[in-house]
Length: 188
Image (tube, rainbow, N blue to C red; front, side):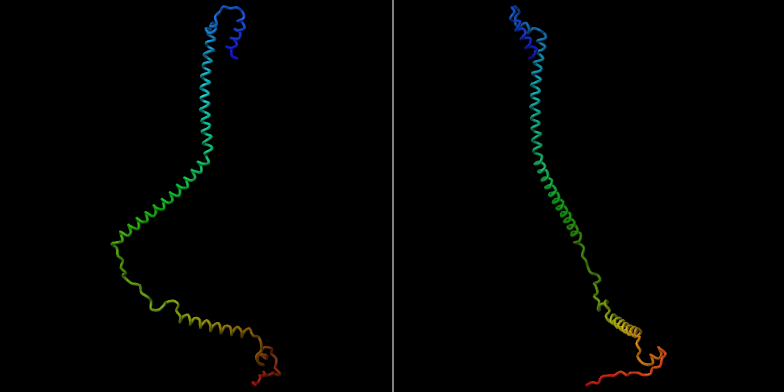
């Protein structure tokens, strides 16, 4: 209960006493006027705060809706970015092709007046200059003969067997008493 109601209830309890003052007497009181003005100001402040509350609730709802729409907007942004990149690559490819076409056209235009003529035709050799077959055969024959004679010489040097009685006498310094001849088979 407010101060005004308390005052009114006190007056009501005093009302059992016979007074002759009119009821509008307390409305003329400056304190009552001040309190009434404060109540009007408080009511206006409450209405303003309620309007602010409604505005803030609407903003909260709007922000919540934005938050809920964030994944779909992100997906849309990704799609737009991908489409933009693809379109940009296509554009750059077409731009390069256009530049190449312009260069080819300019080159063709400049070369229309130029004609090429062969001044000195290429000469075909009468015989191949590589490989020189006779020279290669001669080197092969010489290397084959050298290897053959070298192998025979090495084999002879590595063989330490005695071939006749004279080899034995010179090597050991002993006289040979008997020599067993080689027996050859007769052809039948």
